[in-house]
Image 1 (spheres, rainbow, N blue to C red):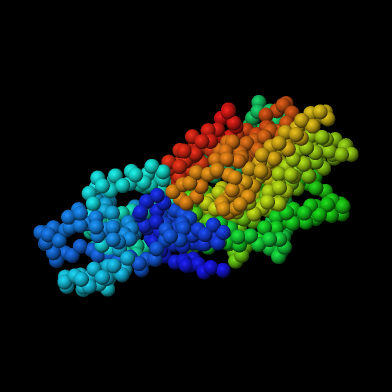
Image 2: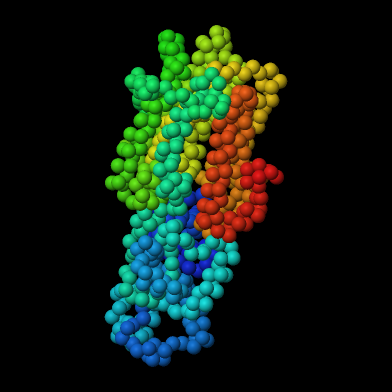
Length: 619
């Protein structure tokens, strides 16, 4: 087996794609299949580079201008253009930038100096020493042990011209202030005054653009989300849940709390935590973090739902009345909300003591409320117990199926039926299939934005423990008191619609996950791609060549199939469909702006190639 030249954690000089510029990078990993190194720049950008595009830091030396020389003497030693060309052609010179300086660290005067940037040229160590041996200048010999960098000054017009040539294919434009620190060329004064190693910028300096309305939006969502869940829980319980009866009457204050319901939620979460830590199932490896580390995850979610189903069946057999969930739906929602708030407070407090590389860029704004809402720490863990991964896939998602099943039992009890109605069966089966598929392919969630980029705070804690189990079950809750008979032909059409949506959803997500994990997989060799400056590629064929978000298209079709069994008498059971459309518009807008910032001109080319966003030829 061939040896790997550079190891994880090594600091080396990596060539920026499409240019001759080298920047200091840190090696994250090496893919033996693709023979590519994953490296990270000081601005947080990750690229995949070939070995020939990486050089050792010790292979470069700097030779700063001597202050002891007069301007006239420096001019007298300058070479003619012809001599300079001959000398440069005899060397394997490459352009290098030695430091990435965060905008938040630079003073105003230093920002002005950055305008007069120079292209830095470096020479191999041996040639530099040879040149020094032939030199009679005592000052140069004195600085031999300082590994200086030789700097060739160019006019600003020349630097800009070179940059324009590179930008034809890659996004090498200067990043905006809110994108954090960036690789940059350096001035002669900085080479003389600044050390070669510059401290990495803080997490706050690397914070990404604020979303969800920014800091003001965080206050709004913290109040609106719990209030909206409360409204839905009260409205769906009305005999006539139409919006003409808004607002629903508030029950007495004591009706919101039930100690038994709180204990039931606690036991359910502990039961799922026990199943999570059992040494059953695959131990999967997550995507590389900014530090280069890959976390391990116990992906035994399908095992958890099977054991949970067996436990529920045993409870029903032993006489436990699951219709308690229907009659105490509001109290269970309030208990889950309280637990999500307590969990969010714990997560935020512990994040204050986390290392900077463990923080989420999107939740490091410096504003306490926004960071509490968005999530300050990326992957909070108690030893090997990953809190975000657990909450994302276990108590709320499997609890969604449990509540649906309880609603089917409540329908049978309330209407004296021997079996649930066709409508209730369809809703239960469709959503059970969705959850079971997600748990069967649990490893795929490790490549999603939630796991890779979003911090774990109130947004995800509330969404996982309250939003999913108590809003996604509204259709089943609605059918308990508002049955909707379906004929067999209608049932057949709805089932076909569901299967089509599920097929598109699963195939497109599987294709995306496989490509993200191993772009060099021979099974994906038929797919066409567009290379980007980040070292990654954009799919422009297969499912991702039809529309930009084929998984969203499948989701949308499935949401329609979930809503149709409830009929058209009221708008409330169509809540999920409406919510999902709003969510898709938000996600599409967010993805467009983020990908344009990240991929630059390559994203513009992608948009010209794949014209339709979610629905072909319509949107």
